[in-house]
Amino acid sequence: MDKFTKIAAPPAPLQLANVDTDMIIPAQFMKSLSRSGLGKHLFQELRYALDGGERPDFILNHSIARHAQILISDRNFGCGSSREHAVWALADFGIRCVIAPSFGDIFSNNARKNGLLLIRLPDAICERLRREAALSQFAPMTIDLVEQEIVLASGEIIAFHIDLDDRRTLMEGLDDIARTLRHEAAITRFEADA
Image (cartoon, rainbow, N blue to C red; front, side):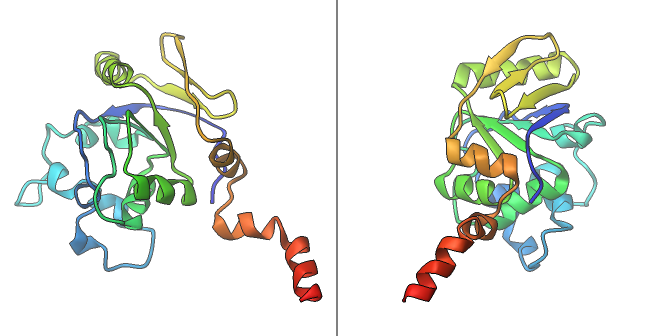
């Protein structure tokens, strides 16, 4: 898993509440056990028309937002069924951080396990960030996990807080196996004593 300390990238504002995992990656694209290639189906039904052409009004089809690493959404992002493919699709597209007022519980766990930073901020701040991203024509913002700060293009700093263990896991790039292996010596001693 890639370490996450700081990124500076254009944000993509997604003015939708209750974005469920089926909206993020529809079930028909979950046949693969590979994490790669899912990004092209991210938000499939929102990004593409029935004829397969891109919908020009969807944010991730905007020329600058195609390179977004930060998604600013509305409340309850990632709700719905347990679907690790949803996190894989976001990551494969290039999204490293999602900012929203709240997230689905299972989605949050899957995000941490796969190196996707989730930042919870109040509704009003998320709304303002979405509006400012559009007004600034997607000027890059910086997400600094070390300092737990969002730095806007204007220089304004917005503090955020995440769970200390999640922060450490992301900064060290540890998946669940790597987290367990940090205790390998203790595990070996326990097995020897058993």
